[in-house]
Image (cartoon, rainbow, N blue to C red; front, side, top):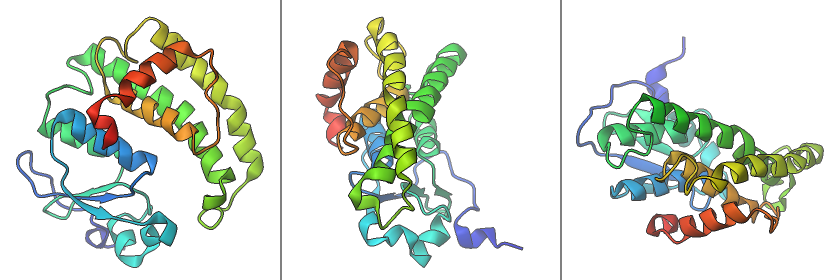
Length: 222
């Protein structure tokens, strides 16, 4: 029988003031999403524990006990609970600090934000990440690269961009008049296109307008 306690998966989080540690991966996209979420909430970052992916520190025995998936970020609570998925971490923070409501204020808003965040995360964000992981030279020692998979995803990027472009044609932000977690996911996906060597075509004027406004926000420097 697996000892779940050894993997940091037991204990119940308290909905109040907690001491937390954030295992962080610098410019990697998912850790950035969490840091930006903290900044948009106006909540100071917890103690940051840097994990150097290039040195394979995420594959160490100690980190694997914390997160057997060997992925970043991980938010460790004071009771040893390890939250190891980006959106799970953001939802936990939303529960502690509901204002501003980045996941929505009522069932309809929450459903729309969930819909768009999933569309972006499973579409554009996933495709851009696959291109980077399977084609960038820096990933050669970290991934069993499949160049054909990189190219297959590269061909899908424009389709995902058009879905986002059409949505932003009628909205200041992805889900309406206010920034939400869906904007953070989409904005980071656009940022990640540059190191993935994917050009953002000029015709995506609404994406360019929206992304420029995101990049000007103080949170985007997190």
